[in-house]
Image (cartoon, rainbow, N blue to C red):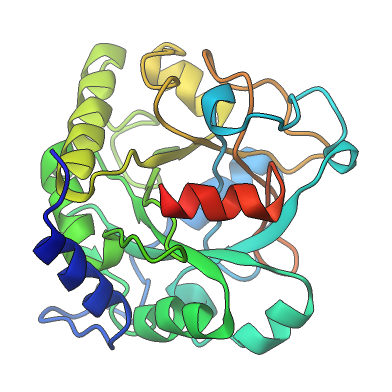
Length: 283
């Protein structure tokens, strides 16, 4: 079910005006609870200096004319981008525009308990005003609450989508558990697949868009059984700090986004020309 015109208008209005939150960031200040960056660093064998990372990739149906994962990234047209969270604070968007970045993803929420309320307005609206094509991402914590509950929390707190040509579909950041409960948040592979399906289904029912999935091949294989269940509809954002994106999760013949480094902050590439990035934003 697609979002109504009224809902879409509300989402657009929210994206262009300062966001306020009735609840504070986790104890200790903004992004105090965003500890998954340390686990990500371990998974990539690097030390993160500037906070969160984010990565996407998309199947062939979303990246026609793109490059396969075994070819150099320089072989085809690509677009350079970045992702940020509350760890980066207020971002100098003019500077990064001058460095050639043209898209950005901003952390909006985590679980059903955390909002990037302090910095999200400057990051989300500031990137838009500079000219970036931007979107929001949600860090999943399946041990906290159900997939549909977290999708609602995400959409209600910055993760919506507007048909303005400058807003990318939201991202489900699903990866290594930085908290207690094991790598897979205490879920079996079947339960994890059900959790992901619930999130993705609710996100689509709320926004009319299929969310991007951000993950690593190792986590996806370990915690979902390397399912190809979601590859036909959902763009893939792959995270791998290396010279190539490597082997992709099952079912995805192409990546849409690739997070390839965290230096000096999380940097990504879009697998296609700028007009294809615009097409993804338009839906």
